[in-house]
Length: 173
Image (cartoon, rainbow, N blue to C red; front, top):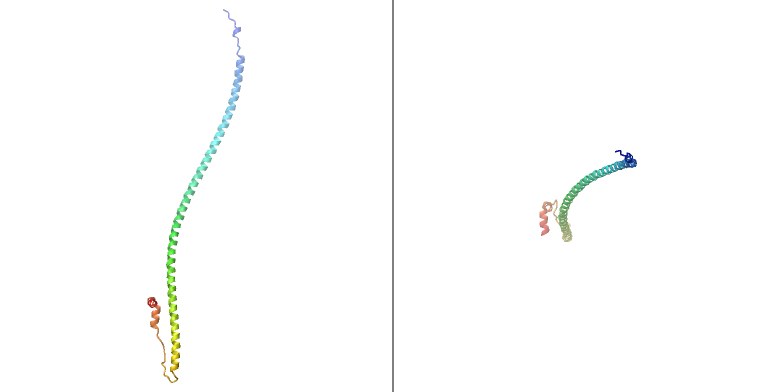
């Protein structure tokens, strides 16, 4: 049998052309997609690097903030302790001041009483001297014998004046 070969001629030229054109398009598309992927990977890597750097920075800031917080808490504790100590000292000082003021007031009263007693004694002595001079002047003449006064010892009076207990007893009387 003779078969006609015409019917079996190569008729796929257009298909091959289309396939070759598709191959070129796909290769161009692949290059474009590969370039975009490289860019996307680079952008992703840059973003990741930026985020990691930011994370490290924030962690450092957090550590620094924790240190600052701990220092502030220590400072607060120290200041609180100092405040407590100072408050206690203030209360003690105020109590001492009250006692001292009371003592000073008592001493001032004692001084005033002693000063008044001395003033009264001086007034009494002045009056006595006036009376004695008036009485003696009238009763004495040039021929009257007088006692010679050579010295007076005031040891007992000085001892009493120097003894606070004796002075208190005199003031109480």
